[in-house]
Image (tube, rainbow, N blue to C red; front, side, top):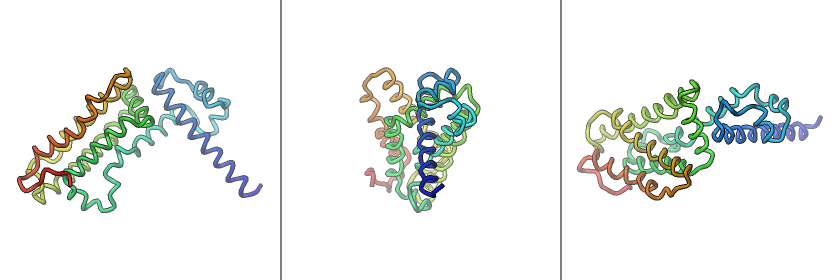
Length: 219
């Protein structure tokens, strides 16, 4: 067998695997994890159930892979886009603004919306989803932002205080607004009353923690 043939089969296999994941995510979000069967997923993908097992050993492994995708989503990696993490805190309000905008954009991304919906549905039922939300989806980002707030305090950019509490106070409304957007979209209602809240939250929050030497502008 030629190398080209092997590469072609590998590429086809990857495409099938991605299709299985996308289909499973859609069905999990729509029907729920427990009611969705492997047969359902294979049927929508257009393959035999036995062929699906060439890629995943069971439904739990599909969910586990989706959970892993969630932990590498835009929310989790918002602090890893800057090449010099040690200088990230110097962005001040601009950093908070970019985090809020990331939350807002994710609220309108179909892939992340489905992941978020799946997570909210399963968080009380599935330990893997619960652990992901608690340890990776929320706490990891709280810890990272807390460290940046501490550095801002050291540089006299913001008032002294509890950086961990500040990080929680900053993130909590963003999760709430994201949930509101999801619920409004689910009911096919306008999201215009919520979309501006992300930026308004940044303005209100920054004005409450900045020192007198800090400007009101983003940059």
